Every structure is written in structure tokens, then in C-alpha cells.
Image (tube, rainbow, N blue to C red; front, side):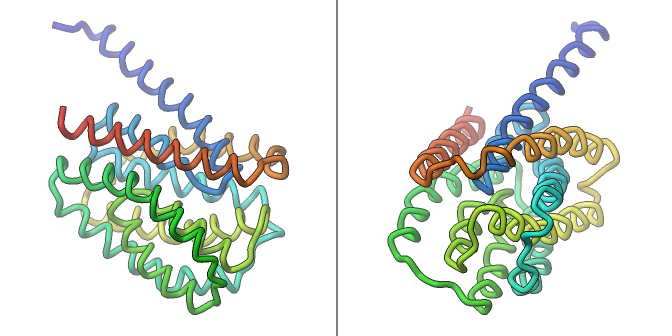
Length: 252
């Protein structure tokens, strides 16, 4: 039987591991515009289980997006943000409610399969170089918002959508973050309303989110140096690794 000191040590090491991965994830997502949830989610699932990990990540994602907004405040395209958020916010709440009705095992499998599927889908979207309008952002917000409520991270979908709208670098990072912020707030409120976001879980989310925020500010100096090919390879690797990890957790 493990002693109280042993349990405390394990908890401390767990928090430290989450903070380290969160800092790395926050830095990478601050550079490429997404990836923090993809990288941090498997760690949270391992540490806390899928049912707790999802609302923890929702709180952390709110903080991560807020940090990117603060870092690039003057670059936000508020028209694009409004078009995306108007449909995405209610859709995210509906998706979160759907998630709470699913069993933990199904959540692991769904998230893992989704992340792996995003790799070929992202390449398909890149080959069809479409120019997005405001109404495309509204439609995309509804679809991506609902998926965000269920599968934790839809950055691989929202990133090309805002890039196709014509945003780049700081404007892209700030606008995508401002648009996603409303979705994750909606998701968090839904979790709280239905009892999935307890004070203990909220505290864990704040701890994870603090490291993501710090990483976002570190990333700002590297944004202009990242090559597009490096970005694509980085995102493919992150999504595949995270997806395989979650499937391994689900079936082990």
C-alpha cells in the first residue's frame, strides 16, 4: 500500500510533467497557431483519465487562446472573428453536451481516430486552394464548433480555414485564437453547468493553462522564422503521435 508521502510525490511529479509538456505545447502552438491540445491531451488523459482530461483541456485552451490574443492584440480581424464565433459558440455547447453522454472508452477512441484522420484531410484541404469568404467562416464555425465540443482540438481544421481567408502570421494567430476563445468558453460553461467542471478540475485546468500561456509569449519571437514546410511536417507528426497514443490508451 502506497504511503501518503508517496502519493504526494506522484501527484507533484504528475503536475510537473503536465507543466513541462504544457510549456512545450504552448510554445509550438504559439508558432503554428494550433497543436497545444493535440500535444497536451494524451498527457492529461494518462494523468487524470479521459473524462477529467476533456474539461481540464477546455479550461487550459481558454488560457492558451487568451495568451495568443494578448501577444498579437493589434492584429485581430474582428469581422472574421465575429462571423466564425456567431455560429461556433452555440455549436460548441451542443458538442460538449454530446460528449458528456459518451462513455470514457469511446471518448479515447474518437479523439485518437479524429487526430489521425486529420493528417490526410489537412493535405486534401491544402491541395484545394479555396479562397474563403465571411460566410465560409460562419459555416465552418458551426461545423468546427460542434466538433470542438466533442473531440477537444479542431485546430487542424480551423487553421486552413483562416489561412484560406487570407490571414497570415500575427493576424492569423490572433484571429484564430480570438475565434476559438469563444468556443472554448462555451464548452467550459457547458461542462460546469452539467457538473463536469468541478473546482478541482478547474484548478488543474488553470495549472495546465498557465504553462500554455507562458509558452505562447515565448513563441512570438520565432513566428517570422518558421518555414511553411516545417509547419506542415510538425503538425502531421504531432497529430499522428497524439492519435496513436490515445488509441493505445483506449485499447490497453
